[in-house]
Image (cartoon, rainbow, N blue to C red):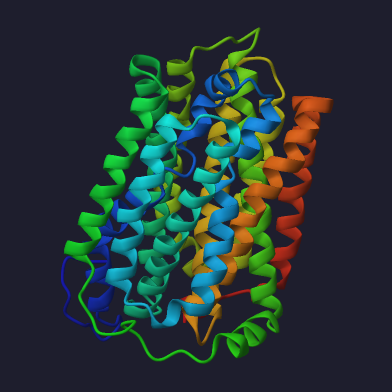
Length: 404
C-alpha cells in the first residue's frame, strides 16, 4: 500500500473502514486484555494453590479452570438472550460485577468455594467476551472484520502472558490474597474502558436477530460452522493441557523453577503477538482452512520439545504451541463471524460455548492422564486433539467470505 489514499486505475482505493479498524486496534486489544486477564492468570500459581488447599495437580487444575465451565454456560445464555442486550451496558455491567468474585477468591476457605467463585468469574467474563465479539461483528465490514478480530485475540494473548506474569510475581512477593485483589482492580479498569470507548447505542447496535431457536438450528445445520465449533473445543482442550500441567513439570526436579521464575516463563507468549495480528492477512491470502491448519501443525511441532527435560527445549516448544494455538483461535473466531450470515451473536455464543467446554473437559481428562500416566502421556493426548482439529478444518470452505 502506498502513502496515498487516492484511487488509481490499476488499484482500488483503500477502504476507509479498514483504516478505522486499524486506528481502533489498540482499544480493541486493551478491551480484550482487561476482559480475559483473570481467565488463566492462576495457572502460573497452580503449584502454590495445590499446596494451599492440599490437593493433587488434577484437582487444582479442574478447580482453577472451572471458569471455562462458567464461560461455556454463559456463552450459551448470551447466544439465546444476547441479541436484545445493549452491548455497551452489558459489557460494562459484566466487568463491574466480575470484580466481586475476583476479590472474594482472596479469602476462599476451601477448594469447593474456590471452584464456585471461578465458575462465577467465567460466566461474567464470557458475557462480556461474547457481547464484545458480537459488537465487532456488527460494526465492522467483511473486509475490516478479520483485522478487528485479530486485534481482539491479540489482547487475549496479552492477557494470557501478562496475567500469568503478574499473578506469579505478586503472589511470590505479597501472597495469593493480594494477587486476587489486584486483578479485581483490573476488572474495574476494563469496565471503565468499555464505558468510555464503546459507542452508546439503542438496542444491540445491529440488525434485529431472528429467534434464537431457529438461528441455532440453522447454524448447526451448516457443516462449516459445526466444524468451527469443534475446532474451538479442541484448541482450548490442547491449550489447557499444555499450559496447566507444564507448571508442575517446571516446578519439579530436574528443572525446579520458583513461582516467580515460572511466571516469567510465560514471556513465551510474546512471539504469538505478531503472528496473531497477521492471521487476518494470512486468511485473506490463503483462506481460513489452510491458515488454521498451518498454525495447528506449528503447535504440534512444539510438543516433542516439551517432552525433553531441558529448559531451553521446553521454552522453544512452548513458543511454538502458543503461536499455533493463538493464531488458530483467531482464525476460527473470525471464520465463525464470516460464515454466519445471520444472528452473529448467536453464532459467537455457540462457538464460545464449545471453545470453553474444551477447557473444562481438557482439565478433567488431561488431569487424570497427568496424575496416572505422567507428562509424556499427557502430551500424546494433546497431540491427538490438535491432529483431530486439523482434520476437522477440512469442512471449512477453501476461502471465507472475509476474503471477498
